Amino acid sequence: MGAPIVRTEVPGIFSRGSRYVYSYRLNGKQKWEAHGTLREAIDAKARRHRELTPVRAEAFVRRMRDRARVQNEIERARAAKLAESRRTAAEAYSLVRKAGQALERAERQTPSREARFALKEAWRSLHDLEDSIGAAMRLGA
Image (cartoon, rainbow, N blue to C red; front, side, top):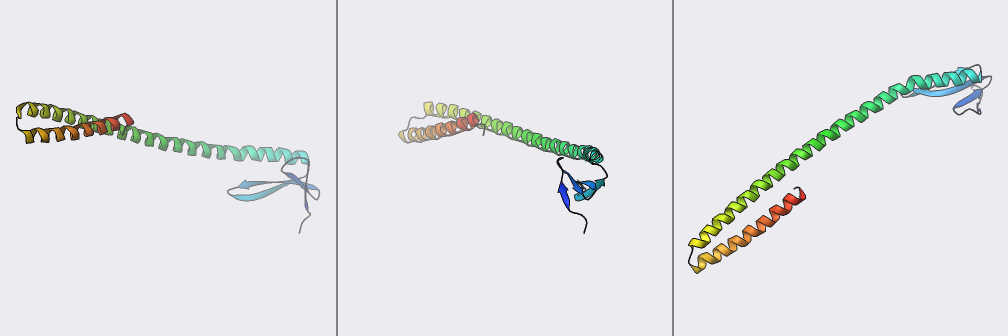
């Protein structure tokens, strides 16, 4: 077994016997490097940090770009779905209005009591449908 590792006043750099050591990670494995003086160890640690950091930064930026791209695709799909549902609701609303006009014409031409009752029920259903379609359009169904 080697000499014990003792902390120095510099974070991340330790003394081990007459040498100064620091650790770093490369490809997921911890590595140690030793130098004769504290100044050499500080400089080597800084150099090693500069060498390893850009790779991590590039990977981070790449992940963030990928995440943003996926998020944009999700937003586009949501917008397309919303537009489609609004278009569908508008078409349904148009059909309801046409049905209302047809009911008005039928009401003018229908003299019997039973037929008027059926038309009244149709009007109620039509208004309920119109209300629910209007609510769906307002909420952005």
